[in-house]
View 1: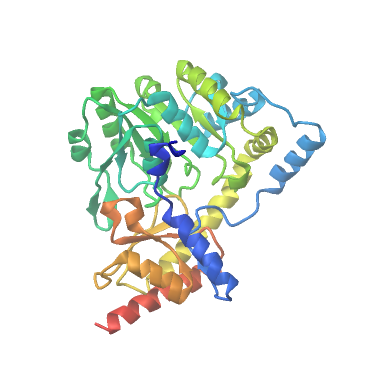
View 2: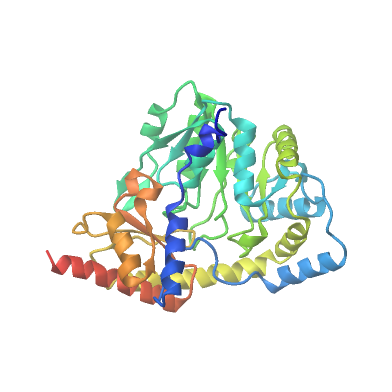
Length: 397
C-alpha cells in the first residue's frame, strides 16, 4: 500500500526567515532577554478608535452573515472615491473586489492570470513571499537583479527586457517598495508600461504601502498612466498598513470590469467573501481617511528622521532615507563578511531583530532591513546595538 503524500508544490515551499526570527525572539524574551524588534512589518499602534467602534456597532446590528463576494457595495463605493481623490485613479465600484488582506488580493490576481509553467518577472529587491506564492500556482518566478546606484537599488529595464520570453505572463510591481522604501517615478512607470505593452504582459501592482510616502514624494499608480495600461493591470492593496488594521485581514483588487468579474468568481470559490465585520470597519476607516492618514504619515516621518539621526553616528553604514514605507534599507560596512551571520549575532548577542537583505534577492545581500514601525526607545536601543556589534567586529580586525 502506497504512503499518503503531499503535493510536490507544498513540499517544496520554503519557510519565512522573518517568521523564524520572530519565533526565536519570543523564545529569548521568555528567557528574560530584552528584545529590540526592528523586524516586524506592521504598525505598532492599535487600530483607530473609529474603526473599532464601527465593528462593535456592526456586530450589535447583526452584520454576521455572508455578503456579495465582490464586497459590500457601500465599501466599494468608498474605495472608488478614495482611489480617485488620493491617486487619481478613476474607477467604478464594479471594478473592485474586496479580499482577505493584500495576500488575498495577490492570490486572486495570480489565480486569475497564471497557468502552469507561466513565467512571472520579479524585480529585486522584492518581498519574499511573491516567489513562493507564484510556485503554489505552478508558475515560475524569474528574478531580475537590480542596479545599485549610490546605495539605492534601482530597476534594471535592460535586464528585464532580456528576461522576457514567450512564457512571460506578468510582472510584479511593488511601489512603494518593501524592503527598500523606494517609490517609483513617473519615467520608471512609463518604461515598465511600455515594455509590458510591447511584449503583451500583465502588471500586478502591489500598492499596499501607497499611503506611507513622505513629502515631497507622491505615490503614483501605474494604472493611471493610460487606459491601455490600466486594462492590463491588477492593483492589489489593503487597509493593513495605512489604517493599522493588519489583523482585520481586509484588502482589495482593482481591475478592468471584465477581469473583476473573474476575480469575484475566484474569491467566491476561495473564501466566499472577506469577513463582513471587517468590511464595515474598513468602511469607517475610509470615511475618516484624511484625518487618520495625516496622523499616520506624521508619526512615521518623525521616526524616519530619528533613524537617520542615529545612523549618522555610524558612518560605516550606508543609510539612504526611504521615500516611503516604514522600512530603512541599510547597506552594512565592508568589514562585515557575512550579513546573515551578522543578523543572527544581532539577535543572539544583542536581542535585536532585523532582516538580512538576501531574503529580498541577491542584489540586496549586503543590506539589512529595519522597521521603524515601533516606538522611539526600541528604535534607539536597536540601532545603538547594531552599531555596537559592528564596532566590535571592526576592532577585532
